[in-house]
Amino acid sequence: MARHRAQHTAVPFYSKQKGGIMEQLGLILVVVLLIIILSSVFKSLAKPRPPKRRLPNLTPPENGRTAEVLARRLECDLDMLVAIPINYQKFAIEKRSGGHRYIQAPDKTLKKIQRTILKRLLNKLPVHPAATGFEKGHSIVSNAFPHVSADIILRMDIKSFFTSTTADRLRGYLYGIGWDQESTDILVRLCTHEDALPQGAPTSPHLSNLINYELDSRLSGWAETIGAVYTRYADDMTFSFHNMNIASSIKRTAQNPKTLERVSCTFPSSQWVSYTRYLVRNILAEYGYKLHTKKKLSIRRRHQQQKVTGLVVNEHVALPRKTRRWLRAVQHRLENGKTATLTPDQFAGWQALQNMIDTQQESLTKE
Image 1 (cartoon, rainbow, N blue to C red):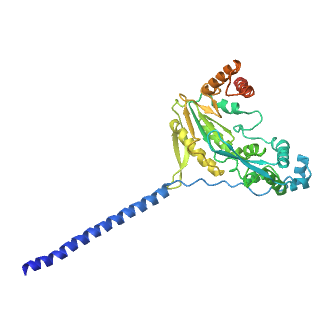
Image 2 (cartoon, rainbow, N blue to C red):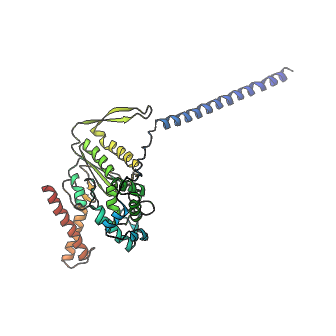
Image 3 (cartoon, one colour):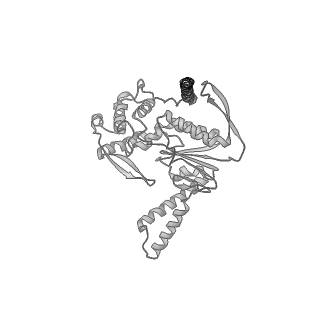
């Protein structure tokens, strides 16, 4: 009887112990889940807000220049301008770095009127001095020259530059320089495709520089603040930092991500490069652009080979050493009647490039 009671009393003991363990495990799981949820909430609160997109002004000006004025300037019939068909041929070309670049080439009729627009209308309009790509009087040499002998060179590349420059931004620019709605509608129709600047139209490079005057002005202003130099060759942006060995700092205001208040901050020179990357990314986002953050982000110091638009700028503007050695080998083989990797005409093209680099650099040095 006593044995039976002992066995009977042992059952509730084990069941209570098991129940207590389960309750503790349940409580631990609840606590862990709460910690995960709270940490994610705090991270989202602490995360800085994305920059607000700058919307172009889409209100036509009063008494703007009319479509008739546009037709006279282009020396075209207005009815013909309105009736020009919009036809593009799409094809892909291989990039040196791998992948493909997609081109939207206009047909002959459309390309002809685009060239007329470029010559009679757009080429007279000013771009920011930092915008050197496809501009008269500029080249890869003039884009690289301001960055010679820098302590650090930071290069960044804009993703899908032309197709990210929207028709609305072009419309806002045209309104801003005084064209009315009808004339703007005509120009936007002739110069954009699929709601953006087509890569392949003769008007797109200069239009992209005109539209981004404010962007270049802001980035150039930041560079001047820290004693750096900024240039942009199409989608390729370069910042060069000089005198980084001098201990100096600047004061800026920044937004506290928790309180959203503006506070004064001091940025020493050692942080200028990282802060410039952060600033450029946010400013570009305001205009609808994104950066290539991996392959095409380059930071080069003085002891490394520093290249800007394909040219070395450590001491002076020059072709890379590997390219120069290859050209000397090609020249030697051609002079001795041997088979070379370039034809005589192709080698003459490389020689012309070398002469252009030397001539333009000498001219820029004298200025």
